[in-house]
Length: 406
Length: 194
Image (cartoon, rainbow over all chains, first blue to last red; front, side, top):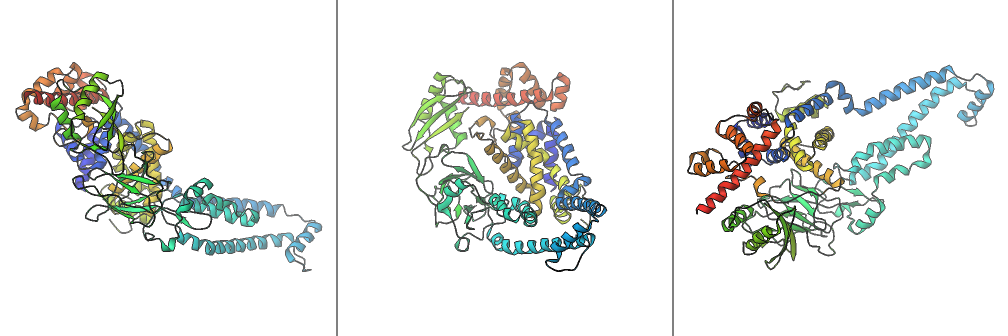
């Protein structure tokens, strides 16, 4: 804790421009083993001319206002709703009471509605509170029934942070109101919970009946289909010691974009229809994780030095393998490759950016300059690279296009 | 922390502030906890979003997420949990915006033990000093002046900005670029000497 405070104090000092050489060096050294700090400093350094100290101070002020005690009522929205409803009820009740019809015709009509065939006559002002009481009772009954009906369904759904949980309170509130006013609309809110039709169609084959799900004990996000079955893709990523690995990036092999990250418990959940994901984290070998039916939901990552495992599986089906767009790396590591290049260039290394293709057989081809890098210079560097250390490709991939930047 | 304390105090640990929020549901507890990490969260958001306004909005949006999630989730260690939450938020934001996440490799921006600071003490005190002097001379005037004042005269960015009458961002930029050029120059010179 004191060490943490020290880091935060140093960072703030650095942002204000008050850090000296030793403070900054110390901060950078800490950042080498602290990903949170490292990424934060990389962020600040990526926009060096911005006045970070002023902006972070303004942010802190905004936060203080947001978290001030008089804002606390926001944490209890139901209290505000209840207070609002109470005021409206009192106002409407008062208005209704003051404007009671005294004509016998209206009183008689209400008697018929209320007494359901009885001949006893009830005054309109006597009827109003009873009706309100009945409505309250009906409200309670409806809520009770609804709770009973939804309990089973809710037990089957997961308790994650997904849209299902977020939308439930609104849905229930709307349902309760509509039961009293327009019962024929009761089905409408359920459509809010179900995923879009095309999503259902895309994932139709991946339905997993919850009771037989081998990983049902893992907390996860689920999408509930209209028939009540759940769609889930989830797994836990661990290291060779069986410890969960947080912050692992899962990329779509088709698009190459990050579609999920493992959390502190190493849990990763996919809510996108993909056939195969690339799993990647610094210090571990990148691997492909096919989204496959009846396979082990645990993925064990190997450290960078260890041999790459063949493949692992996640719940779902694989139809065909698509080559990923990135994730080739030099077998000796980038630092060594850079040094190796520097030792072999006749001129000092200049700023350059280019892309090239890495093939399974070890060939490098099709170098293309980027960002107005000089074509001749790119060719010179690329010809040295072609004689250099072997590049590693993920299993099952024939070639990958790599962006390289100096 | 007193069992029924209703007000957070700066001396409380992360765990105590989090427990206070989970117990009372009052935002000052969470606000005080989150404020500690505002600089870190904003920095990470800047890295991914590359836009100050979007990063500021993201910091506030992450706080709103926290208001809900910090009460529902069992959080063993707040700091790493917040880091993952922040990263996830930014990546999801980029994904919704259909913006590409750049994963290019730039060796000069990466940290490694021997290249983070080319003018760290070990460089100054060993035979690299000659290479260092030579390479500093090769920098442009603005970078050279800032680098000398920061590394050799041990002045802060703020002091340098005051003396040279420059915005602090400009000083930061000169030192950052100067450092990168120095590192390249020293490595190239060392390679040639071999």
